[in-house]
Image 1 (cartoon, rainbow, N blue to C red):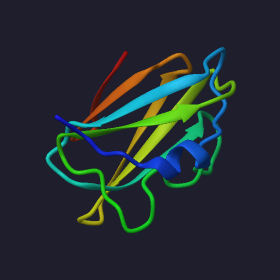
Image 2: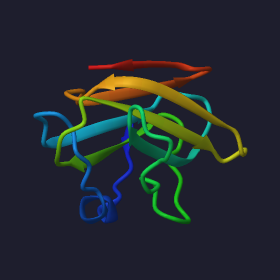
Image 3: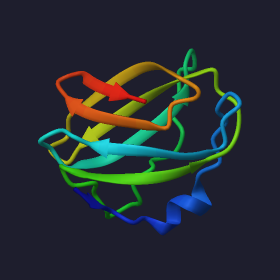
Image 4: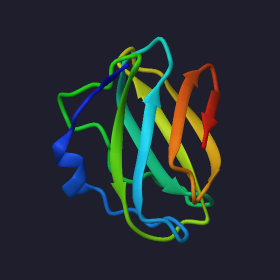
Length: 110
C-alpha cells in the first residue's frame, strides 16, 4: 500500500473530535479512485471542506493521514469517486484513528 502525501491537509484540517487530537488515517480500500472525502459532525446537514486537494485523487489501495483537533462525539464521512458517484458513511465514533473505505457502503474502523 502506498501513502499519498498531501501536505496541504495538515494546514487545512482543524476538525473537532471528542477527546481526540491526532492523526486520522483514511484508507481507500475500494476499487475506485477518490476525488473527494468529506467529514461532518453527525446530525448536521452540511459537509466540511474536501480533504483531497483540488486536482488530486486518492488512488485505490492508497491512504492519507489527516491531522485532527477538536471534539465530535460522532462524525459522518462522504467519499466521491472520480467516476462521479458518492457514498455516505454514518456515525463513526469520535475516537476513531483509522477508517478503511471498502466501497459498496462497506467500511471498517479502529
